[in-house]
Image (cartoon, rainbow, N blue to C red; front, side):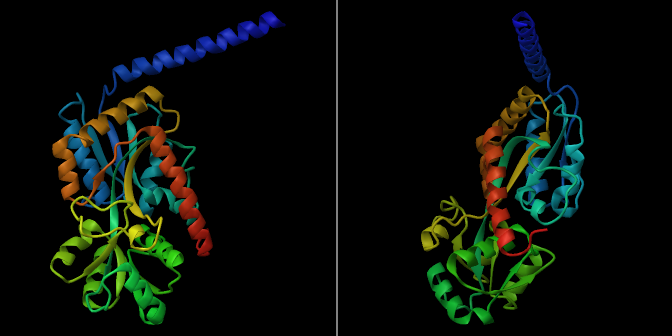
Length: 324
């Protein structure tokens, strides 16, 4: 009996060692053919832009192409489901946003957002600016909160839709400050920004890239930024957290996943190659100029981000009575 157990243990160890060696060998020759990076959003948006920047730069070092394939719809979940069922060999990836951690609480999905994927890396992120119409007599978060507590019934905030990241950012802000203002959903951020400039709504959280040009022309007023630290290109704008709402943070992030079961050595090779192009000085500056920050973290760190955001946004969505 002891001998049988010993032989079983030896066999298991040999199999594990063989799998590790095979994975390492696979990674050494990876990629040997074009890699598909499926983007769950239309061309021209933030997700697509980051994906194509990475694709072009990897073309300088990879012997094959990183091919971008747009499969828009359902907040990216159509593309994500395709990749969840792809061969776990590293040749089919998906570029996601933090909608990946929100949609599981809003609709039934054909995949598990954690179990069915191997995190590769969080590529980039962009915070939101808390912006108001210039007619509002407020120039700080503290002043806005005080004003909203007196005039909340007359204030409206816009977003790109119920359940989206900017919407949840404002709902989190409302919970943490105790204000109550009315939501007006739009079909996209652009439409909300236009109405904010026109005074049809009074406040919103909007992306840096989508709102900053209007702040610079005084058509909108920026009160704070939703990142944990001040934004490098906007040092005069305080964070929401330092403006009296301690611990507040709400950013849109982008990242890459592979199917579950992809060899760790291949995942690590992908992460290393992605991070190298993201952190190249010219690339980093280009991305920053577009309103994004570079990340390029490890698979384990990215996995923690996904699980942490799911816990945070799931709790908020349930408290709002919006969970499926």
